[in-house]
Length: 394
Image 1 (cartoon, helix red, strand yellow):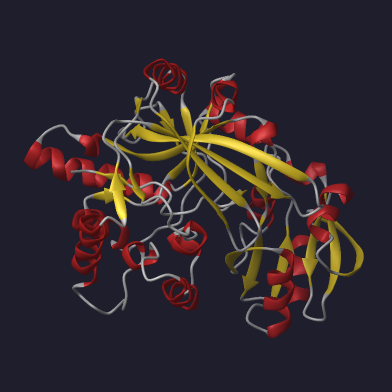
Image 2: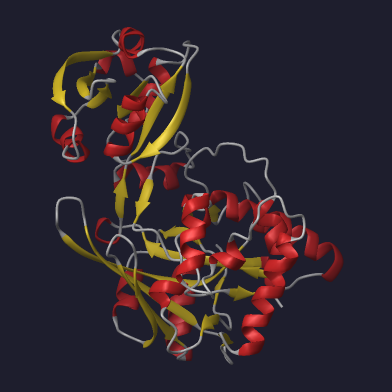
């Protein structure tokens, strides 16, 4: 089972406006987003995490110099003792329900692929860029966490009690993020033992974890074992109360909407759905169906025919892969119903299909049976903020 250890965290100094200085994960930011965040605060973490301009060959070294200067001047302050960080998020779901989740930030062991202990949960799409590896080499730090799901029952109970609040911020969606430092040896030992007692399933950040493995191997070759043997990870318990999962919908090119409907018709029963709006995020669940989005904004319900999917996992992404396995179509991925409607209406794509969120039961099955879901099967929300905790590797 994987090691899970505390570490001396690097944090923004007390009094910093974290709502202005922290940022969403790098992989959900557009160039415009980066510019907006950088303008919001002169010490916003994107100046290190997403160094600009992209065509500057020295941008990673500049990011490292920036981070060192922030620590030298006291903008970033390093803890004197190892700690865990409890991370709470308070938010409203799309249907207006108030929720609060809690997990813990620590250093999770980097294990070899297939070795067990830390498990992938979906197939990943190739990423040729070495951006994260180059940034890690230059800054010698884990800037944004992997998101892991622990199979240890009762982990949440160890995180409920409050600790020392070291930061709070509110993001663009109104989510309140609060981080609390845990440096009590007994509580550290209990949390570490709980996480290390069962496998951890990677929910988000497969690419970051793979990069950590490459970096670990490089550093071991020159320096032997060290802090690079672990990587910054947020770990929450794999239970319904601690997870909010949205769907990542499908966008198609290479076929028009009518052609796509024809390709899907042998496997799905189709019926009109009317104009598609934001309520369809929930309606696909209540209808027990997927929804094809047409350029005019209308939809067609697609109810799976059980006999067409014998032996196929009960995942909408897997159903679509199976139904289109012989079709020459290009698929991309998009979170958010309105974004799908807008993309189809603009002509950027030919059609979209709204799918249902993956269930907790299917995620748990993935872990226990060592299975992999199709790419982009889950979208965990809210997104963790980058900058609330940085893990130095030196």
